[in-house]
Amino acid sequence: MSESGMPQLNAEYFASQIFWLVISFIILYVVMAKYALPKIANVIETREDIIARDIEEAENFKKESEITEHGYLQSIREAQEKASEYLSNSRNKLNLIIEEENSVFEKNSRELMQKFESELEKKKSSILADSEQIAYEVSNDIISRVFGENPLVKDTLKDNIKSMVKR
Amino acid sequence: MAEKSGAPDPMHQFEIVELVEFKLFDLNLSFTNSSLFMVFSVALIIFLTLFTFNGRGTVPTRLQSIAELSYEFVGKMVRDNVGDEGQRYFPFIFCLFMFVLFCNMLGMIPYTFTVTSHIIVTFALAIVIFFGVTVIGFVMHGISFLKFFVPSGVPKALLPLLVVIEVISYLTRPVSLSVRLFANMMAGHTMLKVFGFFVAGMFFSGNLFIAPLGVAPLLFITAFTGLEILVAFLQAYVFAILTCIYLNDAIHMH
Image (tube, rainbow over all chains, first blue to last red; front, side):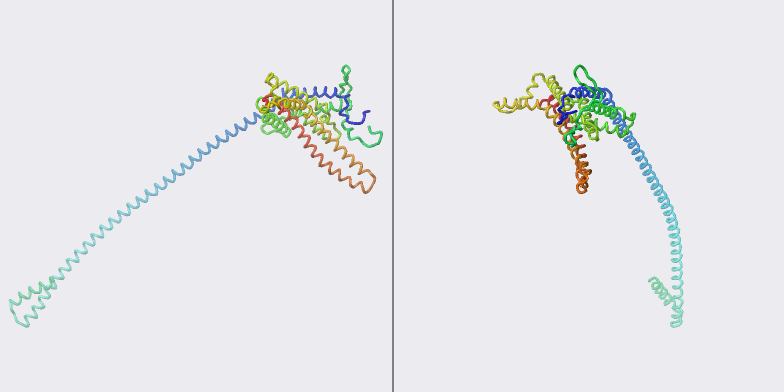
């Protein structure tokens, strides 16, 4: 039915091809321009809006959570401060009590020491006085036995012993 | 067709077959296999862009993604090549790209007819673009659109020659645009057919040595089909982007 060669050069159907091309292309153009493309544009735009809104929402949530986190850290810090305050307070109180007890103890012990020291002093002086008397009596006894009764010697001896004991 | 030698004719696939006879005055406007695939392409594009959308969901369906991808692909093409003034012509470029793409792709299915493998179809598209773009140029710039053919910054002596060259190159645009698409489609399909005949001829040659060798053209044809699918897309893209560039020339001159 067709001559050999390129069917593309067969002019018999040129008109038909152009005719149907024009019809189908015009239909395509009208449908695209009137319905399809505005719809696609709308869908894409709507989606971008939704995504933008979602991102904004997420950002807000993030901000909120940051604020909450900040508050949480703040309260932890406050609690720590309070705890350390309590700790130092009780330590101070304890120190005060210890100091008080210490001073009472020191006072008592100092008084006791003073008492003992004065007693010691008293004992010492009494012992000294006793020893003076004993030394005098012994030496007087010796002298009276050697030299006989002599009041002058007695007095001199008494003075000498007194000075010796004092030394 | 092949009565004389019995050899199959690779051009047979391009033959127009009347499906429904239709005559207007003396013109044969019958509905042919070519018309069928034009209508089929248009129907597919309309289906893809209109009926795959799932309500107003944020997550698109798969086919919806394809439609949106094409929309943004062509949108970017127009924006990058023509700019904001080109937005008015976006629907036309979109239709052009989708129509050529679908005709090319449908032609890749065996036993189909490739609308764009006929020079008259591609030339009709190209001539419409050519006149449309020229009209847009004159409407936007008036008679000064003729300056488009006068390159600036060249010696006066050369001007007559260069203007002639510019005019010729402008006038050949529809030819180059249409022949590029048509020749690519025709050559590819012819090549596929020829090698297809090789495969069949060798497998059924009855010769035990030649028959296994039929695998070679079969492998070639497989790879070449992939290449042809790429070409089908690429030519639709080239067709659309050249239209954008012509449009840009008309709107912005140089």
